[in-house]
Image 1 (tube, rainbow, N blue to C red):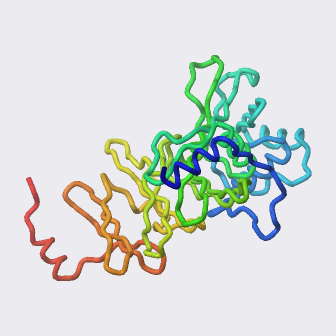
Image 2: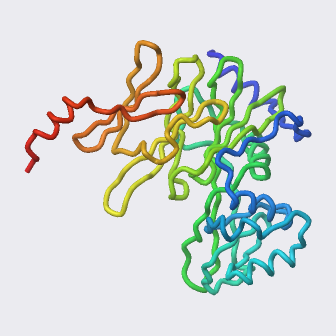
Image 3: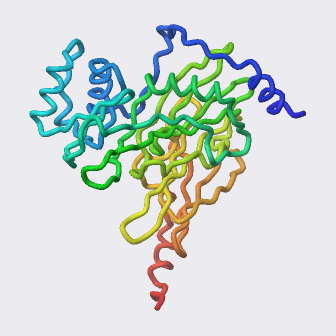
Length: 316
């Protein structure tokens, strides 16, 4: 039996996660934290539950919530700005949309689960582990943007917030637990002495709920530690494209972070120094991106190559 199978058998039998205080030197890192994110954390402390919204307005939320504020005062401030407030047993949902749904007919379910697409080198978690890890992430991670669920007007609204989880080996001797929250945010933690430690979450990638997934684990910079490659839907109105985001084990983003790695498909070529180039394929054009100072940049064509390309007649 291989080492991953042995770990799986052991953890399935006796996996227990204890929620213990976090060391002061190990605060969760929220990469790309926005004013809207800060508002969500503040409002969650006021309402006592996570905040979901389809509104990303730093100018609106930036000064709206103060720690220690009452529920009544915050709710009044939200309503006065035209924001509908729906609250169920697990979440508070904020939206400008006013569909006529009664608050008691609105519900969002929390659904932590094993990922449907599992990269090589990962394994499924035991059901108890999924629930416990999910509980930690629900209360410590930033929530994703959450579009108002589709439902007939004046009918009860029911939706699900999905967290896809898996345990993977990125670095020898480290039990990494990875997840994609709502299809648009990567979350990362580690098992340490039987305790799950949530360590960081990523900026949002893509716009479509549940459209992103961990597509591959690959050592991109040649340091012996695998990076996390996330593929997400970046399609336009009439064309279908994928986007690629790349994160190291510490949460640093190797892709440009500006949605520039977008194409019909991606290929990878390993250089002599161990670093991996990303080839972005679009129709008959392929752009090569190389790793420079920790981030991928697109290689520029030489002047000679540019002249040759310009001299080619357009295709009919």
